[in-house]
Amino acid sequence: MADAVLTDKQEDRVLVERAQEGDCPAFDTLVVKYSQRLYALIYHMTSHREDTNDLLQEVFARAFRNLKSFRGQSGFYTWIYTIAVNLTLNFLKKRNRRRMLSLDDVDSGVQNDGEFLELTASSDPVREAGLNELQKHLNEALQKLSDDHRAVVTLFDIQGMPHAEISKILGVSEGTVRSRLHYAHKQLQAHLSNYLS
Amino acid sequence: MNKDEQLARLLRLKRHEKPDEAYFEGFLGQFHDYQRKAIATQSAAALFWERVCTMVTALRRPSTAWAAAGAYAAIMLLIYAWPAPDHAVKTTLVISNQGPMVQPGPGNPAPPAPGDAPSWQATVPAGQTITVSDGPALQPPASGKRRTIDQPAEREGPKN
Image 1 (cartoon, rainbow over the protein chains, first blue to last red):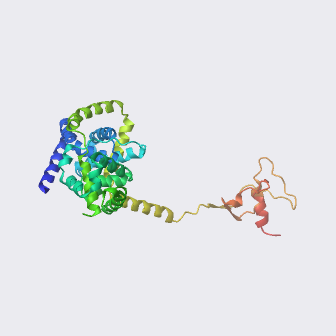
Image 2 (image 1 turned 90 degrees about the vertical axis):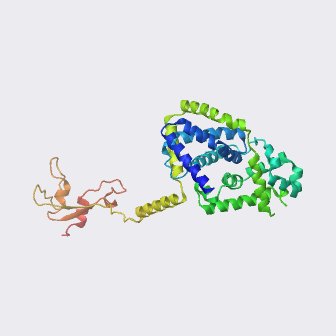
Image 3 (image 1 turned 60 degrees about the vertical axis):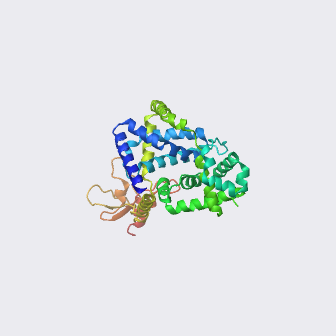
């Protein structure tokens, strides 16, 4: 696993160096590589697919324009995630809070997800709610969090990122990340109490 | 399974919310179109500002923030703790006994004629030292009457 991560970083470094020298296809490779992960990050923070599409393009455009200033002190992955989080947080500050959700479909793979099967087997409310209603409630609960709290929940709980990496991306201490997570979990438990036994 | 674990599982279900594969297949082409439009419309000033913001963001780390805050505090402390210089300028005038000297009559001060030496030369005895300060003492009196140098000289001069 560690070797795979190292290889991934080395691969990124080579692609970034080539892109910095003007090799556009190298940057295209980075776009293809990170578009799914960054889409997920922005989407879970905004709960709006059209906004996500616009923001994702702006993230890559900004990364491309500023690629010369990237010195490689952090990984490209951390750098582009930082751009994405900051751009999304700025966007959310300006966006009307009452905006309606615009959600992506839940893929059919969820029906075979072991955790989902276990949840529906053990929790009557989850089983009775149905997938679409559960998805709507989850997104509504997330939108009730502050933007900063939603960012840490997205990075930690949904994307599975470690605290140290989140602290680098958000530019806060690990203690702050843990504290935000603790507070956000308490709030989510209150909003989703019907689904938690 | 406690509530924390249940919540974590519920949140992980959100990973299944995603657009279909066709979206990501077409994304690169969409991105190229977006870049072409952005290059045509974005101003040089906006580009410069964006670069500054990205650089600042890249530098933003908790340790850097603490170091910057410490440096700022030290500079402010230096500015406020430094002893303030005494701005009151004191000038010492020494009246020389060389040059024209007009002796007024007793109780009958002669008005200075045009071309005569100024009245302060006439009324301050030679060799006397007076100190002139730019402090409030030299401000005109509230009555609006102009204060002349012979007034303090009469007051401070030798009493006969």
